[in-house]
Image (spheres, rainbow, N blue to C red):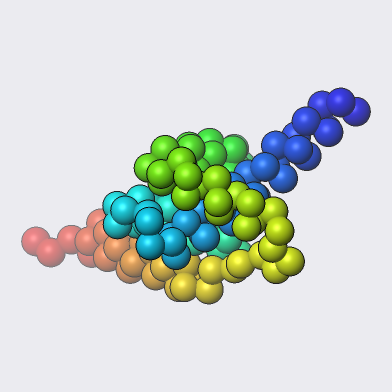
Length: 130
């Protein structure tokens, strides 16, 4: 049971860090490049749609277990320490957690572009112009 408690605490910490990154994006003390990275990471983490759907075996959880924590770690390194600390305090005290609706649009757009590219490639393969 200790193992489950450790994972639950780790997940709770990641949620708080994502919320803090969301708040750091809105802070005027955060440099533009840190806002960009933190905003993308927070938007992806808060999006209800994954870029790689979880039902896909093995790689479906790859973004949740590897890419997202690495993105959070990188974004935290770019945000000034005092800003991050203030945002962590605000995230702990917040009653509502943010969601990212515009990231849903980005993920849907990526999937649509992928489908268009795949259909074009399949069309070229099965109907080669000679």
